[in-house]
Image (cartoon, rainbow over all chains, first blue to last red; front, top):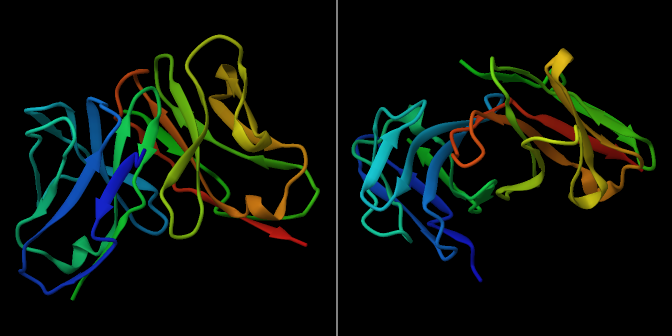
Length: 109
Length: 114
């Protein structure tokens, strides 16, 4: 029972590059979210999904895209990375409480 | 709009001492309240949650929290801290029990002295 799996765990990007952060869950939870964590700011919601085919913006969506073609997968895309997107990214499922992945530490240089 | 404030950025306690981490929220209706713990390099783990009913809720690892509506608070407590409790603790508030649109506080880092 893996729970929420995020890949990669670490990534360094150059400004302007694109990449996709992968997130997969095996708990059959409908609700999934992406958060970013920055020092002194807690976690801020980027995008969320209430089920396959349905996504919506959170508090800080600019510069990020998501899609939800299956219940299991919820990838986060950075179209043109910027240094301000240097952060730790967490994917999570919600079912009366969050289950978090172990995070992706992204550095944009 | 909801907001969450954790007044203490960093707390140091001695092993075996009692612990209280403060959390104040702002929300006009009945809040749904959570405490999470994050060990270094790890994701967040749910300690406990309050949806309704008894205002004193018990969680994992010997933690408890009390919801006080009059004070808009949801403070986390533990009678005797262990060295393994050193971590960062986050309070969060939501507007519904079955959606994940939570607002997190800034976090409190707990250091435990031997």
